[in-house]
Image (cartoon, rainbow, N blue to C red; front, side):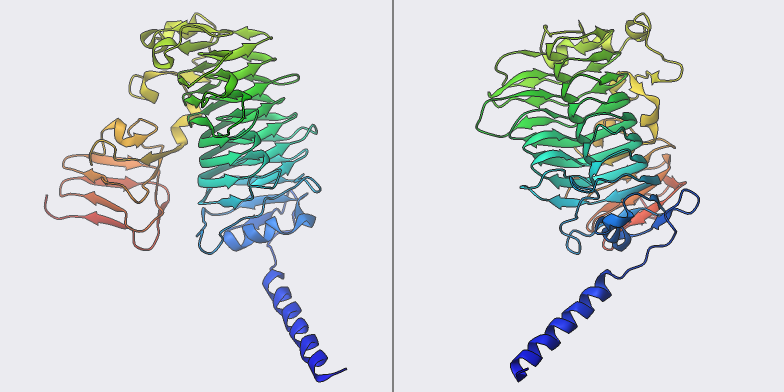
Length: 445
């Protein structure tokens, strides 16, 4: 062996040793239901995403995880077309913030790229940024025909892709999704796109979407909806709602405030969003319908549409009136609730009360004004509050206001929250602040 060859061999050996050091991270737990793998931080989450041999085990998140995009600029999905995730992931009501996945030429993209017979529960994604090709969603890219169960999961951020794109999940061929939500902004260039799900063959109950949906391509395409692009054989969507707009870019046919094309059961659903720049087959609730639709409504004033392929149009006042829904058999005992001070007066799902509320400061610095928050509501004792950076106005709590919330997350530098003399802020749960963020308690007004 020459001296040059010896040097090359030594360099390769050192590289192998470094690689082993980087990825030879252990994970606590044995992966059983009784002793699940523990996921407490970013490094363990990254380790999990690279260890397909573990994807059939039980996992339990043990803390809120805040990802620094500078340190982890591109996360690899857990589960793919070759090896789907088949295990159980319990978020234990913790969150993952700032997840970034940028794989524009890759299918099956999301925190969980592909599921098969899996269980995902009790997890929130905050400020996710997910880009893929086909089957793209913030939480899940694809759920196969082997049914998976997803419950109590909530996402916010941006999602973009080509086909089968949804704010929460791109495509589901079976399974059950309950008590979950998406506040993702969704954009796509091709077919089957929705604020919550792009292509649905699963049973979806007690879910909602608030993010806007838009077509950004040059080609004429179809099936865009505020909640679902298409819902077809084997699936149904019940006791759910959407509020986002659908921008058709003068290209999309079959566009609906709730579902673009409905070919399956829909019961007790509603929508309030507009259809912008439509072409053909569009409607306040559904653009096209060939199936059973029962007791579903859309707001004719906010949508500015008097027609729909299915459903019943109501005025804004009627949409905020309890009897509109109780006379149609909606359950306001254990499923729905309605208050003039919450969800802008529209019916809401009870689980919404524990979802994160984000400060936007669009009006001024007054904590107590609903329009300063997204969604439009003043946080209460059961709410988790997020205050982001880069805003013109930051919240000020004045005397004699006494504010109590559950959790407070100040995830970026440059954020200021001010509590003036006589004012009071109580955080009963978790308080998280990144370096450079500041909560000021002032002794004088």
